[in-house]
Length: 470
Image 1 (cartoon, rainbow, N blue to C red):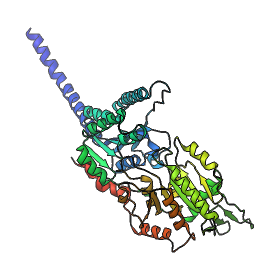
Image 2: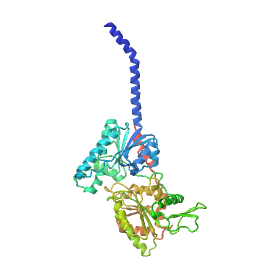
Image 3: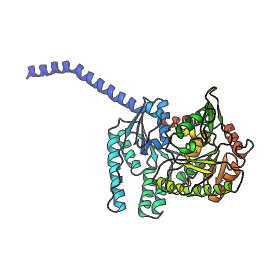
Image 4: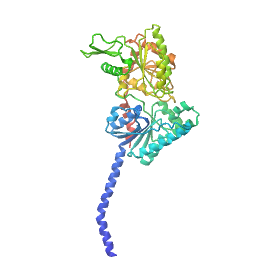
């Protein structure tokens, strides 16, 4: 018995350093994992990453601030190259459940929600622990509850970026009193209160969240990224020539007679000197962006273009107009068919889907932007206008409750309520185009002089202190 005790004591003394070493290694591993988690952020978009610029900007800003970022979302369209090339950002593609195509609509929606909840939970649990989970809302069903649950398990703080209210968007389709909409509103209100930090896009939304939802949020206005800026005329020409290979409105109607000039519908380049200039008598370039859904009433713009065509035919001093409408969505083919039946003579309509890097160049080359965004809640702002202003592009925007936080009527653009009012504005802005003393140039001058804050500066002042405070 005594010998056994001695042997056990000797064995313990021999193993003690090994056990101590293992404990120290395990402790170091835990501390390293905690330190790694402290510098890791998960960004969740239950939508197309390529069409979620604000969440792309969050990921890039976090990466520039020293965080490693895992970005989860659908990859239907290409994100910005800067995002793809960053060694601090990993994109994890989510799979979207396609429509079942059978059974009641409520059942289809329920199956989709359950699938997304289980699938997102699995993907998040397979991701390294993070200090924060940034979530775009909407869509928040079922993502808010799933991200909150994972945060509880992994000690991650949930940050909700409120772009709008998901239930208000659903209400456009089903009606505000539909049981699904009422359930979605309850869900959004209940789980929205469980977040640790909240960001929102307008002061009006911040006040509504505080008064009606008991959610304290910080306003982070959408700001243009640094690549949204006026496009130099030589890059304009390069873009127009590129687009001209695919879209006739960008092609020149006349070939140059001397053979030494390269010409688009808007610009020409002397092949000997390389100098690029705008064509005399060129068309005006109008740009609008839409998701081709019912919440953005494209028919307003189409009706206004018809009235513009009538005014141009009547001999008014109006230029030809090229209207470029970017985006893709379920109603695009429907409206493209309507456009083709109009047989315009002074208006050409083009509906391209642009590469991410070409979109800022187009905005920086345009003469006027038109925004058709109609807010379902009246509390969000159209990011497309933010991008246009970054390019010093004046805007005509359909009016709603808090648009004044972005568009100042008569200063950096105009607001309208219907097609009649938009048609009058187009007539006024394009009369005697291009007029250096006209309203368009006045608005552009005001935008140049406004010294707009850019996304990186705004994010560092507003968000960075929130995620670096111990």
